[in-house]
Length: 262
Image 1 (cartoon, rainbow, N blue to C red):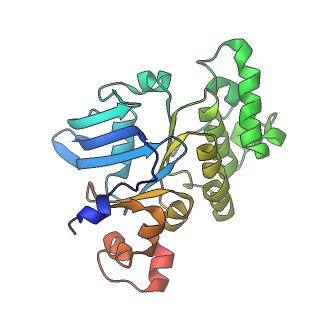
Image 2: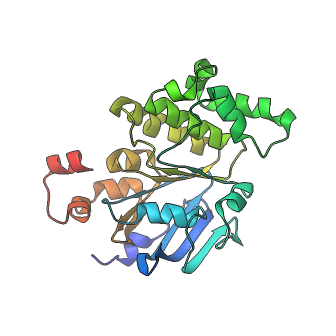
């Protein structure tokens, strides 16, 4: 389905882009997965990327966080080009990735995991940073002394997000935060904890399998299909479209099917 000019417009009240990926092409070996993908997010904004399995979402995450070379296009951070920088270099510039798996140090306590997230801080700055994280995510306060490996999937994801927040990042990329998380906890993550990041002024890129829940908590929505952005518009408008189910499933679907699949 071609993208109409109206579907790629930038809302007048959208914040200025802080992370801006333009016309990105990337892939593996000789296979190109992403084709001219453009995504942006401003500080204090949640931009979500949803789409069917195999649409290129994970490839985009790797490209924008420095784990996969960009073959074409540019990535700007605060107006400065960072296209060729590695993940560790991007981290020093304020970009943090919360991966889908291996999100915590299992043998360490929650407190120690948070301290690890403050590795770029001066030692005397770490306690205040931990307190900021605990204020943002009060549920972590009672877990501080718990061993991370014994936590539930949802608690582990929250620790990982809190750890990413330690060094006051400008951008956090969340790769499938609801994966391996119980339904109730995934709802809390998406409806409360991800918005808390944006409320703290962070630019949030949310790549998520639970499309409806992701769009409900987001400001802007991108639908990726076959390595291309097919829809780009306010998240509420993506939810209201009648053809989103077709993009995900390749056929017309009933309202009930859409609710289940998305």
